[in-house]
Image (tube, rainbow, N blue to C red; front, side, top):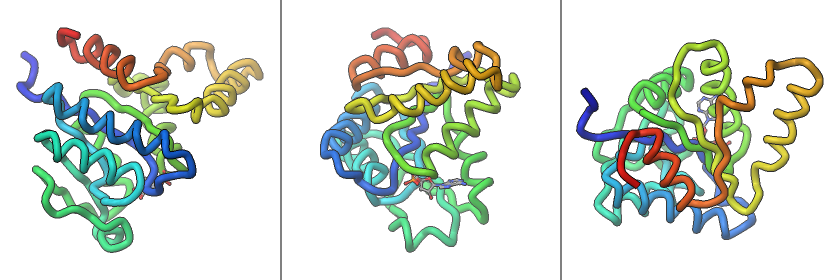
Length: 188
Ligand code: AMP
């Protein structure tokens, strides 16, 4: 039986980046999740794309589940008004709690932290440890170098071609919504 609420984890930058298109994307993702009744699982901070996604989800009445290590609460301006706030002792624990409480993972533009989060769930998937969907939202072509790198890794024989099938790339929020509907078995 499916749980009543589906949860979507969003990995994204704690900075806004230089291209305002990504902020708009983050806002649209937060609003879309709220409209669909999908709970946002994220890093609990109020900065950058993270903060923008959460604000949009909350402004549109969505549920939010934030997870943050105690030592980052100040640096990442942790929100204490989320539907649920989980404070962890370590970064590893943070990723574990975010993953365990999500039905799908979406990756918006971000830096080393977002890449770390993406590669962790991708490698877990490669090892058969889970079958949760992983979706790269290629806002304004931001992830093209990453998908190119993954193709290169496969072409050079360092990964099985199946690696490319363990994640999907979508170009916009409408395509993301459609893919999530399919992945979460909900009507588009
Ligand atoms: P960034 O994409 O670098 O802006 O980071 C996005 C988020 O990922 C921030 O909340 C970081 O604290 C978080 N992050 C960075 N490295 C890790 C890690 N190793 N484990 C868990 N979260 C991380």
